[in-house]
Image 1: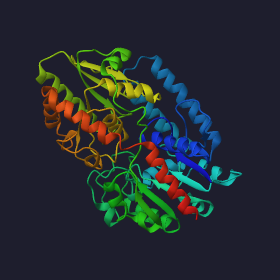
Image 2 (image 1 turned 180 degrees about the horizontal axis):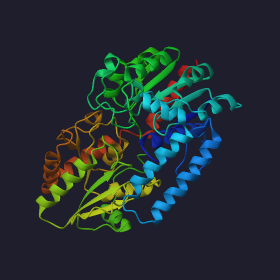
Image 3 (image 1 turned 60 degrees about the vertical axis):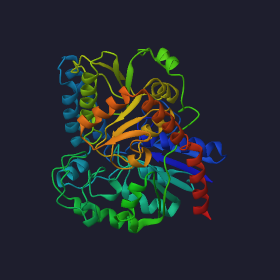
Length: 446
């Protein structure tokens, strides 16, 4: 049995970590395993397919122009460098990929990528199982390839967001128009931003693709699977299952807090609030401003300078002039070091406006952290309010800060919730997830 995991990238993001765990688990089980990526953040031996531009000359020219202009702006010391760089990239990409630019003006979703087709057509020994993960982010997957993939292999999709169910967005934020063919979209300004509302056209286009496909669909949360079974994706589903994400519980487990803080050079006597994410500041649905406001309000209320906020996966913000103790840690590919941050902290703050079944919450629980989070998506399936954490409504930074304060002032509550989190988190072992998928893979081939 040959099995390929397909994802945008690695190691960034929850989908990348889950796909990589499956890749490793399949290999350790004695099967042929491949990891197919659009791109990688670091050097690796995985299969990189890229986007596959239809106009390679334009691609190279636009890249050189963008790189030159970006370097010139950066060397000028312009404070809004990042904003200008993004604008330059948008301009050069309009030359690089004119079809994509046109689709954006029309409001059509863009699928014109050769990379995935090159992989389908050139693979000598094509996999028996193709397991798709994030097929939206990174602009690399041509959804129109699903019928062809279904002819060559058994196709699995793990849903990490809502994009396959909608006419545009991968985060509906409570909008129910996907049930009725979309249209009149309230989220046109969200990623991926478009100029015109063609969500009804897009959703119908997806429906036609799904009807020609045969897909085994999984979701880590009951919340998302319930939506999926009522969506256009049902037209292509052979079978569907709820399979929670798994984590390496030999790494993500309770540890010695004092030792972890010493190794990470964190204050030994501070109450440490932890956040783990990637590019959350620029995301409209991850609740970064809510989270930041909640921590600041909490820190003010304690009246102490012995609280710290550690943000893993976020770059330092030069505009942050807060007097509170804030430490920014770049994205970590070393999971053992990431586990140290969980083990060093006192509580995880997760303030998403919308979410699925966040791996960071599982990792934090397994390391014994109480969770202060929002009552959205599949999070209530992970965190039982008042049992192993405290859940409040999205965007309510006052309520979140009060929840932090409640745990801060009650050592017994913190200890009880910590033990409960560790017990629940230990039940989400990646081996359990891998075995469930392997059994399903084998059943699909018989």
